[in-house]
Structures are given as structure tokens and as C-alpha cells.
Length: 73
Image 1 (cartoon, rainbow, N blue to C red):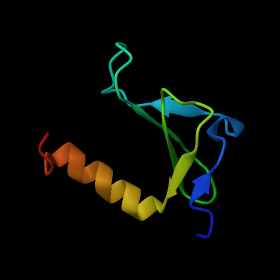
Image 2: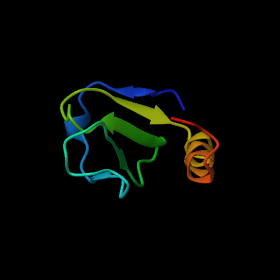
Image 3: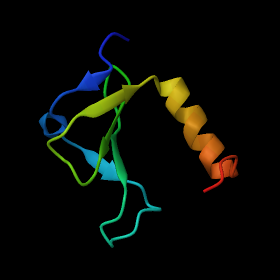
Image 4: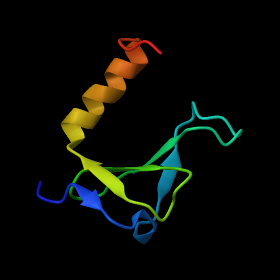
């Protein structure tokens, strides 16, 4: 994958926020499913800002590790 960033994340549609995110406006990330070059991830508070594009296998591994509690706060 050559494209690792998207300068203006609002150019993509279909952003979704984690079900673990609250509605208090805290720090949250959003992702787009089905993007052909990987998994775009952006800061939900900066919708017109950049998005990072992750390799799907790496993203899946990170999410699995987070769900398993392998990282502490």
C-alpha cells in the first residue's frame, strides 16, 4: 500500500465511531469499512483533518489486542 494518509478525511464517506465511544465529545477515532487501500482512521473531532490508512491485517491485530486487554491505560 503506497497511500498512508488522506489529507482531507471528509473526502470519504461512511465514517463510523467505535461503539465504545461515549457521546461526551471525548477523544474518539472513526474508521471507514471497505476502503480498497486499507483502513482509514481519523480523529472524530477533526473531520476535515487527515486520516491515516492502516494495513488491514495490522489494524485487525491492533483491535484484537485492545479487546483482549493487552494494553493498559
